[in-house]
Image (cartoon, one colour):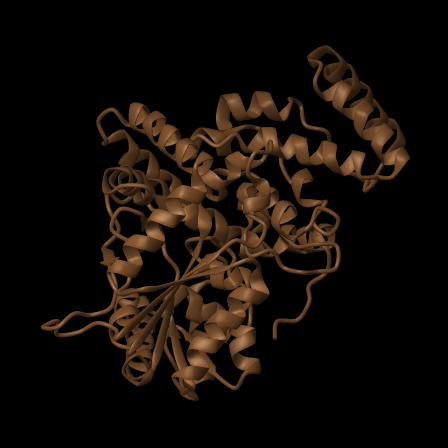
Length: 455
């Protein structure tokens, strides 16, 4: 069980003082940003495609119930078993029941944020079932007993030297920090587990309604090992991940990898349609698809419905000036509970799914620069929802009256360029004469800096 972390503000303060963390974050997110820009620029008519994708996602979410019913019919016809889980507890129970019925004590897992959301590994461990993450990044953070720090790069906060230390401790022998040595070690250690597991558990990037197919996108072969070698495959998927047709899925795939890692298409793009058939040389005998609600349907027909259009590409994390210096582990609740989703998307999703009272600080963790909206393949207006959540916090009495008054005054000053310049001028004078031990007020506003240099 992961130890509880301090609340958001203290976690963020700790992260900001960690030079090694900020160096690792900027290096990794910088590569993702650069690769995305190149990949997006190489796609003809990409802005029109993004507009088209926005329309697809918006229309799909508006009619989500019908598309889920079509998927269930198609998947059942293909031999898969479809389950619907109202919340995290129900999803855990469905999966545990399947594993128990098959008498399995070893489960291999492909990368899945949905399983992180429902704390599945802890539930499996409590039931005496060993669950092993086989995505390299997920395995690293599992060995470190940490939650993922990034939606697509779970160990983005780790250096290769730290990974070598973890592998050495796990194996009981020294492992060099060269990348080739680390990957060879992981390959050898995980290979025997692939062959021994009785159940494989994955997420699902897209659920295609017209054929009942699950599309799994990975950059490692572990996804195919987990979904084809064990006798039973379980896919846990958020209800919003439905694409009505393969045409819609094609648009989705054209933008997903480009937005996430800067690739035209991920190395392994697998399509799973039911269990193996007569004559197939591999594949599971049982396929179970578990759709997770966990508060998602509650957002339909509200001002937050748009968040269900997210495809979890992680582009907003890579561009966000807050995430790039704090990392994903700073995104936690007042009680120290870690949000499985971080960055701008996490700052919206966590309060909506897990409670604004506990995650009230996360909507404040944004400069509202709008960069997240600019890079989002579905053009989701995250700044709008962050502001709406801040208003909800005030209306719910989660902000103290004095703090609310100060925030309103600050908002008025910060939204008026002349008032801001006057306040900044007086602030600099005050710092000079009062010798207050605070960071020096910047010579120009963040908006000006971002417009001139930040992007």
